[in-house]
Length: 216
View 1 (cartoon, rainbow, N blue to C red):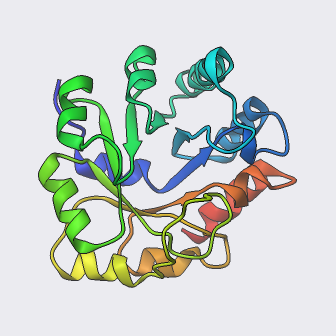
View 2: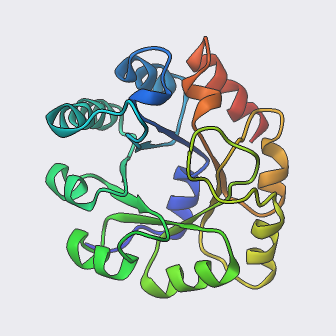
């Protein structure tokens, strides 16, 4: 099977919802159901934090969320955990700079799976592309409370730099993105936005998703 076409991937990255149990005000499954009802285009399971599930509970939550994604035809991406992605036959994986390189992940997952890599500089982006990444997650664009180990805030400048230097790979902005500040991320050259708190923490999750779709 072949790698996903980049134009199809750009469409999936339009509104990329990321969450785990620690991010949710409602149950994780209820949160995902409402987010999909609202119109998210891609989902990433990211179960990290002091109170995050571990062991079998971690795996079982992943299975539940993946099952609903499959029923609704929303691709299911796993954050960092290659073994879990393989075990579940997930649609892809997203890794950071300290994780296994995309080149070796590709050997384990196969050509048709989606591999995303976090990039904070031009050099990191170029290396990820050379290693075979399908898309780059660029940021944090704005201050964020969702990651304890977040890098320094980048603003939209790094996205502009990547595009100005000729990188055509699909890009998604991440970090502190809300309905009010999403537009500049796309204007800078991102194909979509990644959102955690502004969706997972909303009172009306479906309505929050629809508001994002109106501005992107």
